[in-house]
Length: 295
Image 1: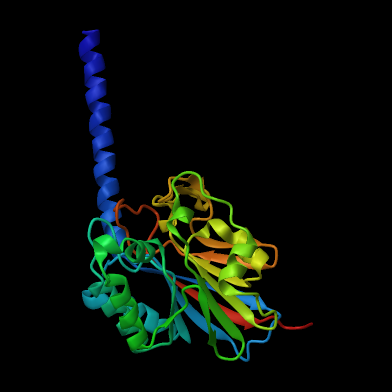
Image 2: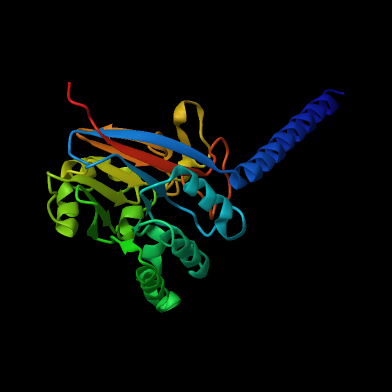
């Protein structure tokens, strides 16, 4: 009789667990198709000429919000941005790769706004593994340039007279699982040169692990992604897991400050290997840049 009671309780618990799992997966499926907008205001003592509104997108991973990303484009359009910045992983590169969906979306962006683009680890993998993927990376980059996208891979471009946008390409060693190398500001200076202190400096750096180095180099604002919002957002804004198998970290989304530099981390738009989002809706990041008023 005791054995039957224990077995019954085990079955009840198993059934409850299965029900909770099914509900969570169903909720995640709905969440992955939804779209949110998060707005930030960043004040600076540097001259901007006028206030600027930027949209930052990261980690689309070939996902679509409506046919040809019509819902995503409409969400961007509603913000009336001065420019759109993309932080990498617009495609998914694993056993196979297809650049067409990402290329079409980037062309659509460039047809309406100035676009500044940097690579993430998936574009870097496409470039590195040419034995497997051939010249797909070159074809993708050539298509972006032809569409008028300003690619800032280990380079910089100006937005107006007062804002410099730079992007650093991180080799795959910076995306190592569990233990990540420590980055020094000199790494960024070797690739991007010294910061011009008279300009507002934006840095596109795909991984948010390197805020200290970005701030030490002189970035006023860094924009990152890569961590997919921690997959499952826990109370207090903590993320359960990153793609590099770091657990319970806060820098999976939101704004973080180090010294004189700030970093805004996008929770991204898509998924790939772990097709799961809980309490972690896909997000369009909007950054309003404004001059700090002197009192």
